Image 1: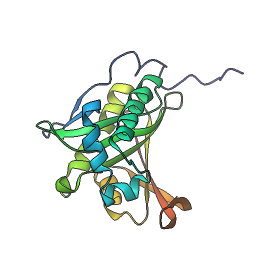
Image 2: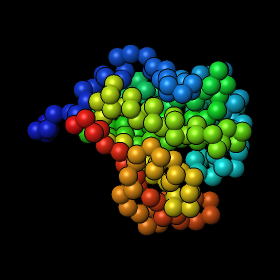
Image 3: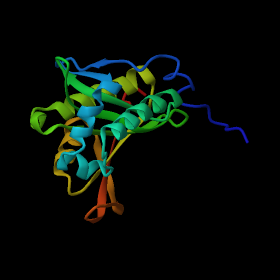
Length: 192
């Protein structure tokens, strides 16, 4: 049965081109992950802070390679996208869209920062640049951000980047230490 509502973003908007590098204006670049990043991605996912909130382990460099390959597949399928956050070629973290629905004009974002780069505004700068690109270039209408209510740092990133707190989902996600309530934040394209 066909939809009576046209898609917010036409199919092919992402997959018609290579995934871009996004510049933040503050010296950071968001670039697609590559196979050569696999050892670094593996090491990053061993960090307790990254691992705890991402909830999936990477147990080898080959698993990191598989994850990076899935990032490319997600882009081509227009279902997800991931970028390495870099400054002067050094990887500092990750920002991405865990899910994308072009029909609905909605995506869910995610991010993490390596321990040595924390506390320097890397996550907010990266998320702000990604959000602006999603609205201005892709044409999305809404980006959602979910985090455990126990993750105060992620809540601060959301607030700094204009993601309004919309509510709390009770016991919505199970982590290693049990069920967590989740905050849902969202940002809308204010140009609409």
